[in-house]
Amino acid sequence: MAEKTRWVSEHGPDHSQWYIDRFRRLAAEGADLAGEARLIDAMVAPRSRILDAGCGPGRVGAELARRGHTVVGVDADAALIAAARADHPGPSWLMADLAELDLATRGQPDPFDAAVLAGNVLPFVAPGTEGQVLARVAAHLRADGIAVAGFGTDRGYELADFDADIDAAGLVLEHRFATWDLRPWADGAGFAVSVLRAPG
Ligand SMILES: C[S@@+](CC[C@H](N)C(=O)[O-])C[C@H]1O[C@@H](n2cnc3c(N)ncnc32)[C@H](O)[C@@H]1O
Image 1: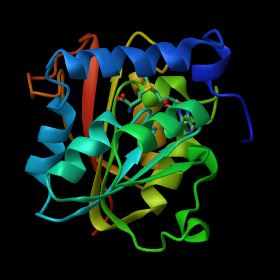
Image 2: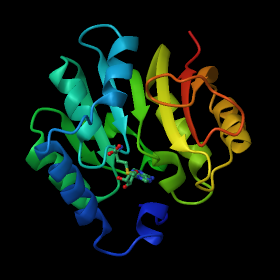
Image 3: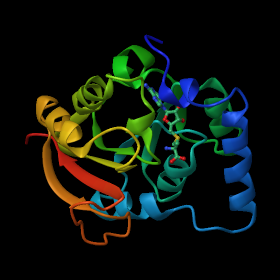
Image 4: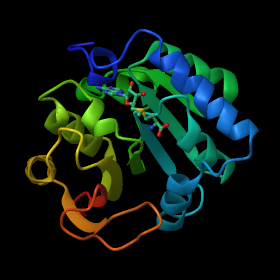
């Protein structure tokens, strides 16, 4: 791991376990935890190959796998990857730093049809590595593949910086919404869901 992620530097040591417990409790209560996966599923072909980038305990990737896709989940946090493996067998859950991602060296040489960065992944990467993360995700997409990233706009990663990083990563911003259920984007909205396309 090159640098400490904000997920680690901004939270106490118990935060990952709190996060695991929270999503286990919400799942047990029958909460709808599949909003992001529904959107991705609607945008890709059946049986697509999907990268869950910053997968945490596997909520999004697991739902995509249930919908028939082949999922590889990557996260830098060992406790979260352990929880994903325990709770959601099926997908490949790998511990790795997205800023240095090279899945060919981890037995995953095939490109992805889509990548999803859900739940504020980009504002939680190590400061200054957001562009590298986007570039490494882009490098794992097939030509014409998509990446969808959702994050709060008040979490320290400015949208203008994101847009510059998208460009530098060779991705094209195709759509921006204010929610994962596609409410229209308006300047100043507190959340942005951005659909990015790799060159065809
Ligand atoms: C708020 S969690 C979201 C988890 C999951 N996507 C979800 O929606 O439940 C943010 C995640 O980003 C991960 N993360 C942050 N920087 C990372 C990096 N450089 N490489 C891999 N994972 C990273 C954290 O470990 C954490 O699991």
